[in-house]
Amino acid sequence: MNVQSTVLDRYSEGAKEVQPDLCCPVSYNTELLHALPKEIIDKDYGCGDPSRYVRKGDVVLDLGSGAGKICYMAAQLVGDKGQVIGIDMNDDMLALARKHQPDMAVKLGGNRVRFTKGNIQDLALDVDAMERYLEKAPVSNARDLASLTLWQSKQRLEQPLIADSSVDLVISNCVLNLVSDAEKQQLVQEIFRVLKPGGRVAISDIVSDEPIPVHLKRDPELWSGCISGAFHEQEFLQVFVDNGFLAVTYDKWEAAPWQVVEGIEFRSVTLTAIKGASSECLDKGHAVIYRGPYASITDDEEHVFYRGERMAVCERTFHFLTEGPMKNDFIGIAPAIEREPIPWCAPPGTKRPVAETKGGIISNTTNSGCC
Image: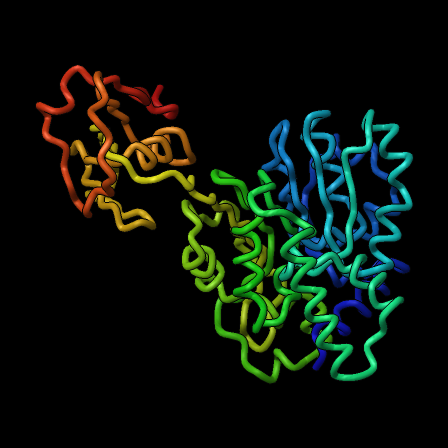
């Protein structure tokens, strides 16, 4: 089965006629939908609402942007200092999204959305540029193919479609499951590459509760219908952890499955994660106290935090724990006088002596959930 051609054909149909089977019921922010043309709302398919993770001023990249619904919703949230990039491989979907750009630019007070053709598993390759190259130099033999491969490598390096560390937030709505299994690892690596240090991920997608057998994976209808290419529920989290993401979380998990095929439950989830800062681990005397309720926890970098103990951390980890998504779980103690920095990452379970933290600057002393 040719995964890409099957998916392109199915979604070309979806650009022309509404395909109810391509989406789960989703509750979107109706205020953000008011400005959108009905055609875009009706012909955009998904299983979640990653737009709710958008912040003002963000540069947002939407993987598999389709008819552009999530892009145009996000554009209302990023404000005039932000930018939204939609990437898709389907010409019919891109045409539909671009068709309404002039009108949406007027409504938004500026053209802060652009749609571009590309593979979400290869965010460096500019497919529009490649197609222009192929018009002038079509491939008809092995030598032509070698020239194309060389051109692609040079283009990725010198003029990548999406540059390294250029995006604040990567979002996607029920699209990662359409990428072939052989390319899913590369897909997550590409997401990591384009994110800025501290950048975020919000991916709504379908996961399975059991491994998907080969005969279902070979079914083109199930694959293009967002079923048989789904990640297993544990694998989806792990592939982001394995590729260096931190705070990998199922922020949303639908209790009821969207579909059940041969006893396997397929449900909608939203995964969030963060690309850690690229700064060096330096010990300046920082400490954190894990509030509880568990006896201890271990993070993705193998740091161990015991409940109620002053745990030694490098400056980078200190800021991540006290300013990031876990900030309500930790009390931070910054040294009153920073010591001379030493390159160092705390071994698991390293405590900071009380004598070294007296007089320190304490943050997050009140949990936001306290009455």
